[in-house]
Amino acid sequence: MEQGNQTQMSEFILLGLSEEAELQPLLFWLFLSMYLVTFSGNLLIILAIVMDSHLHMPMYFFLSNLSFVDIHFTSTTIPKMLWNIQTQSKVITYAGCLSQMYFFMLLAGLDNFLLTVMAYDWFVAICHPLHYMVIMNPKFCGILLLVCWVLSVLDSLLHDLMVLQLSFCTQLEIPHFFCELNQVIQLACSDTFFNNLAIYLASGLLGFIPLIGILSSYSRIVTSILKISSSGGKYKAFSTCGSHLLVVSLFYGTGFGVPSLMPISHLAHPYPPPLQHPWFVLHWFKPPILVQTTVLMGHYKLTNTITSEPLGWVWRKM
Image 1 (cartoon, rainbow, N blue to C red):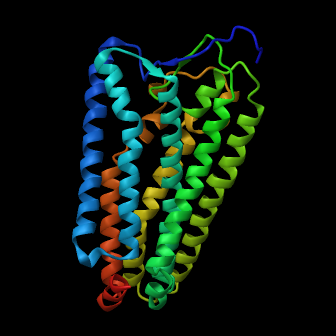
Image 2 (image 1 turned 90 degrees about the vertical axis):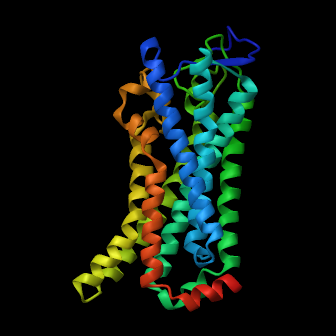
């Protein structure tokens, strides 16, 4: 972009999902209800896992962390959008925008990595049930969680620091209800080559590699399940891991379908209203709590059919 017509910027304008006044009450109550269901439901899952000693096992440890991330993921964007609708204000400060971008990318990355770790957990539980508690010991689970956090923090911090180096033009309207990285970069007057390069590299290394890990884990799980002689055993095994596969499909399927979440969006034509994209609506309105509950039910099945109580007692004592 040209260097001219720059400004010392202090705030952005969030255009939101729609500028039609009659849709604002509908959007407000719809997002508010979904946010409350997501927040309360995931909180109940965390409390249930913490309070029930029988659930102090690796699979529930990662599930509680996934619920924790989902609570904060929705809290990063939805409350600000609800506040803007209620106050009829579309302003977000520069510092607020950077903070929102940072936490959005951090928590989205955590979601991605935790799903990968959970796929590995399923693989060990189904393919190596006798060694499950030895492999997935508390120390190893803690290391896996720490790696997820470190990678997510470094990725989001890198993008945020690179945005800080950009100069912005007078056109500061973001066609979204939150500060999304691609949309913010498009507003810059300075060269954004390295920002775009970082997005592509991060998408490849931190996006597709975990996806390959998930597919690899499930390919070995399916291979092991197909070796089961009885049809009832195959059905039970598939039903236990199907819940996590549903989460992965929703996360990656809707994520790849949403233009604003893809790194190539800044190369396309001007961004149309988000509400016109069915994939966008599906991605933001899918009820995470229902998905989490499905995963919890799958974990119960897996615990009852594969992991014995004595082994669970050993893990809790380690």
